[in-house]
Image (cartoon, rainbow, N blue to C red; front, top):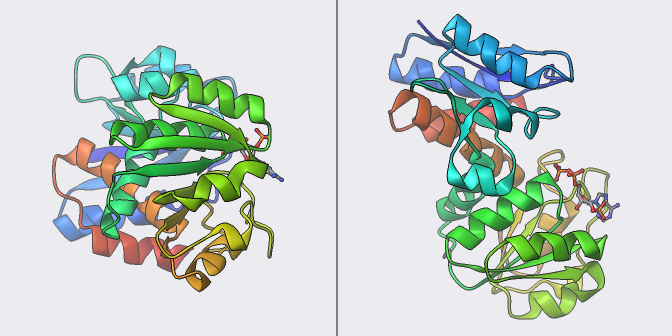
Length: 265
Ligand code: ATR
């Protein structure tokens, strides 16, 4: 039996076990997905322990995404982002990937969003970093907007062809933009949004990384403006799909995993 799992602290609320196990079941794979909750300072030790035990793959979430970098051989994108959310133990040394970046890209592609032109990434924290690097790697021009403008500038300095801005620039930044991704936590509270509704338009695709609630105020405003909308569950789904495919070498049964994820949201 293959064993995959998640390390995080806390992990109690994770939607990954039902999503991944639906995938194993659909493909007839003899595999399980389990959650582990190491002490908050034991991320690197947990990777070593998993390798010793013969665990096949681990997802990594808060607070370990940066800590485990030193315990793995990071793929180039994960190294540039500075965070790992997926570890593959099939090689001589554990390899670390960042599938959050690819997750956003694949969520947009699933909705036939053209991955070209200009993207506005709101937020410069962990999610913002991953998405900014992921979209820039696809060839998009990235504009990072953040409440703390200096953090947007610092991130933009690292991402190819990116610029940094404060949130008050959003109307100007969005006027000719093709894609908007919200990577802040704003939207988890009812009726809050990081983006003024009148800055949205019908020529933009809007992905919200927030998935509780699933229909955020931002996505409601975007739909009202005639924009293409992609909810945060798609990004969550595709970071998992990307990990699943790296570990198993099989195409993931995306529809089944999506159904299962949404059932548990
Ligand atoms: P994550 O890993 O989910 O990205 P994070 O690293 O804590 O979480 O980053 C949170 C992001 O949400 C940051 O960009 C933060 O802006 P600051 O850098 O200015 O703190 C943004 N954010 C959080 N609360 C916000 C709010 N009320 N208004 C605007 N931006 C907010």
